[in-house]
Image (cartoon, rainbow over all chains, first blue to last red):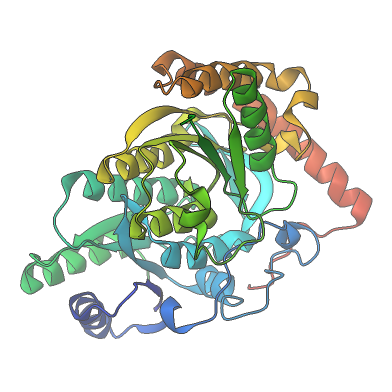
Length: 188
Length: 211
């Protein structure tokens, strides 16, 4: 099994990375991490080229060129972000937007709403890890809503977890284990 | 001192629908005797200094497309920049728009805007949240035909409230979310038009470069 991780945090976070690496090694999964702060990665320029000029591929050639390929092939997609105003940070967002080539221009109805069809049958479960400088119920709930919305758009199972300085390492590790268990249930 | 408004058009695209909406709001504010400046973020990849460009505007109106169920990167980066600055702006409003017709798809992004306003002790002056805006095609909203009559009406109404420094009533926000076309009809027509375009250009639109 292969997990693709986008680390969109402004600074390294030892608890988040520790929990993730324990979870991966417990399962003997392989993984690849894109640490956005260490890359030169352009946000989506909204050119529409991935549905016309270079169908299925991003026209921007930089450290983000391979994001769509990894997401298309992985069995678990993890997005780590600082929580800003309840949403993703701009650093995490610039990487997330580069998954756009995996979306087809065609429309479909999903869960009673109009959505774009997806290019690949593989719909990796999505794990969203948010980091807050202090507990904040409103932002936590907004982050969870956003993760759920993304899950609907990518037609994938999804779970979000929030880390704060008050988070207990042991508890977060077991919550992450449970989340991944739930997300990958039935996957071989 | 007169009341000043800044409208941030937060799409990375050139000739964007956000820019069309921003210009329409600017003109509507002028009709209400309020001058407004547009901060156009097209092709802008570094927001350093953007907060200073907003200056001492009394009201910031953010116009953002919906990318991945939330504000665009440009909008998010702008709000982060404002958050770190000593910007004295006291009021905030938003227009979050998307190609999807259903208003529910833009609710989270609007909540993020509200959250931003509250976190910075700014007065929230409400929102307009139209769908199907991809059909505007970057042309002047005034020339965008009868499909966007309701959007123009809602923006006119919203601008009248914003010009007075008042919050846009919920009825206007809700009305702006009314889809100009049913999602199922849009699916049918949209897919037909995409297929026709792909055939014309000889595109293998279902190509799977990564397996």
